[in-house]
Amino acid sequence: MRINSLQLFQFRNYEHLDLLLDSDIVVLYGSNGAGKTNILESIYVGTIGKSHRTSDISDMLLFNANEAGIVMNFEKKETPQKVNIKLFRQGPKDIRLNDTKLSQKELIGTLNTVIFCPEDLQLIKGSPSGRRRFLDMEISQTSATYYHQLLQYNRLLQQRNTLLKEYRGKQHIPLAEWDIQIADIASFIVKKRLESLKKINLLIDLMNRKLTGGLENLTIGYEQPYGEDGDMVYTKEAFYDLLQQHLTQDRHRMTTSVGPHRDDLRFFSDSIDLKKYGSQGQQRTAVLSLKLSELEFIKSEVGEYPVLLLDDVLSELDESRRTNLLQFIHKRIQTVITTTDIHDFKNLPGVQLIHCKEGQIHYGKP
Ligand SMILES: Nc1ncnc2c1ncn2[C@@H]1O[C@H](COP(=O)(O)OP(=O)(O)OP(=O)(O)O)[C@@H](O)[C@H]1O
Ligand SMILES: [Mg+2]
Image (cartoon, rainbow, N blue to C red; front, side, top):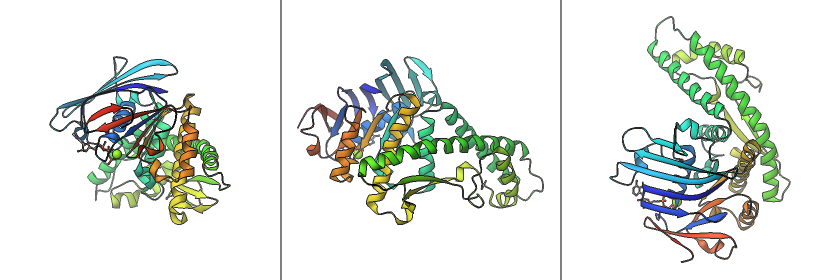
């Protein structure tokens, strides 16, 4: 997969932007606040339909503008395609692929990207929701059905929780209909997550060895806080039974306590829990391996590498990991990198340098 051009209109600090990407490695450099991450964000929005850093569309519109636009020309399996997204301060966004209108759901998976930003370094230490989102987005990019079911699950869950609130203190609560459906989708989601994790585990270990040259064994475990004796819950019957067993508690708390929305991932290096005992460096390497495994996972599912977006993360890695990473992506994966320091890229062959400054871009070295 490859992005050939990007045009922005009133997106963040870009009144107008016309960017030609003519290399495998594109480096956006410039000082803090220049608008480098804004460009990566726009590419991400062009592939997923929403931002990785805000859920509020109006944040992305140029101050005082009422609409913004993103147009991207890209190739997938060597077929040229064009995505055109309009964002409005009021009203729904307008997404078009090759001039045909699409929903956001339908856009996902059209052009695959993997984004790696400083916040991702929190993935291991941070909250379970970040890890769930990571896994869900990775699977969704390769399976539209999964994304669809996930949305449906969240909708049903919300309805169930509303009922728990509405029927507070009442004796009978009509949940049977919901619980049957929720258990059914919960089973689908967990099965798909476990199946994908199996593949990711093979890949992440491989990537980790490549990166560190070491023999540490990196694995990801799946956890269910409600599971008993470490047995995984994944059938619809088991989920239905669990929902009934926790009903008194759920009614009391007015929220649903079992299901994939509670599950979590855990990272182990040679059976050491990295969240609890891992050093800063070990956690960082694990996240990097995870991101690289995501590239391979998408390649194995869709037959082509996604585009990689690296937001300011190279400076966070030590020399050898940075070299290993650049070697890995070289001539294989189109990568857009943001940095404040072009020192590492100045003399690398085949790199396109782009200077960002105050909502404008200039090609080449300073
Ligand atoms: N909606 C908006 N309209 C206009 N300008 C905006 C908007 N949102 C953010 N900006 C501006 O964009 C700039 C930040 O852009 P961005 O996050 O891309 O910077 P950056 O080059 O990645 O900086 P850093 O190196 O610090 O990460 C800020 O100057 C901010 O004021
Ligand atoms: Mg930035």
